[in-house]
Length: 239
Image (cartoon, rainbow, N blue to C red; front, side, top):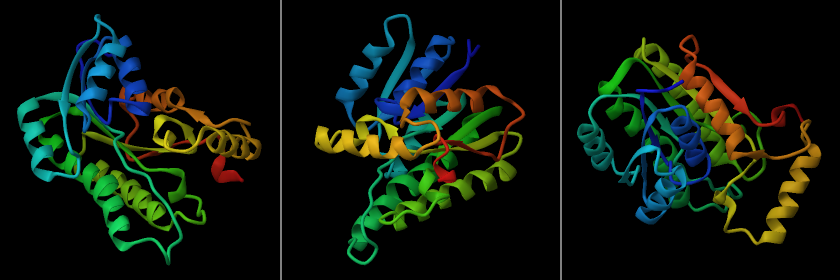
């Protein structure tokens, strides 16, 4: 159980972050949610229910000043989870450099800032959970930038596990997960994409936000796990 522990989830207003918040709150944790959208944060707090201990903050994770200010205001806490991240792809030669830089700013530098400014306030026996992704470990056409960013995050997590010890630092690497991040796709195209991926995976389905959240809770709970990359991808790297 996580009773009495304070968990900060950046990106906790939807998808994997919200699923993680629900599991943590169900175990008695005090949950702090941060994301860009005040409206989504309000909806997330409502979804957690009146019994949950939840506080929300609006945050642009690409702003170093905002991230630093947030953790200075929060003070001491036990665990940090950073699920907030933009994901995008496209052919290497035709992807605008500005788009590549934006992805790096969001998914790498955002997590870098959060880990840097959270660490001094974290319980020394607590944890940080970063987020990478399957394309860091299985090359896919159209994912040159995202794969490189995810690989950088995974290496950052392993290095920080050494530098910040005994604070534990781990990284989750999800595969294809059915979350609101693909809500921009037409429903028919999204369904066809998921079906195509599911047919190739050993588990014969794509993942859910809850699948990944269970992995995050494992990393939070297990005090003997640090410097690991937890693959929650249905065997995608095998195919």
